[in-house]
Length: 135
Image (cartoon, rainbow, N blue to C red; front, side, top):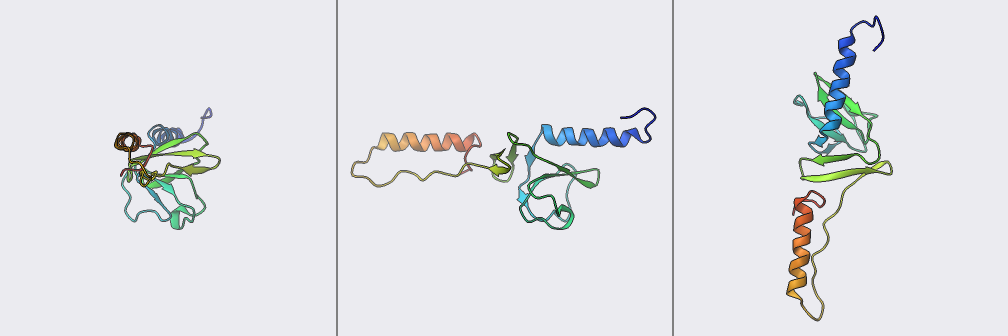
């Protein structure tokens, strides 16, 4: 803020809205088109081919605050929780990444039930922690 600045509350309110969106980065999902009736506090990851109010904001976070969309430029290392999948997404090298689900073991000449059970447990634990998508 500047000394003698008019409408300081607008600057402060926008800063607080940005802080809130960045401290609690939980998105409802990824989309190219904004929802027709967003709720206050909704946060989305803008897809790669955005249109409408989200045009020119590909890959950014869109947070609906005080009746407008506030766009936040992500930085490498940022993590968001995708509420639609329960999975954590990581911003790195200029793009969003998330782990895929590994294939369950099958085949082979000798079936080791204990190893398969351990691998299935690891996959379940990684899914529960949000690293892998929910099974």
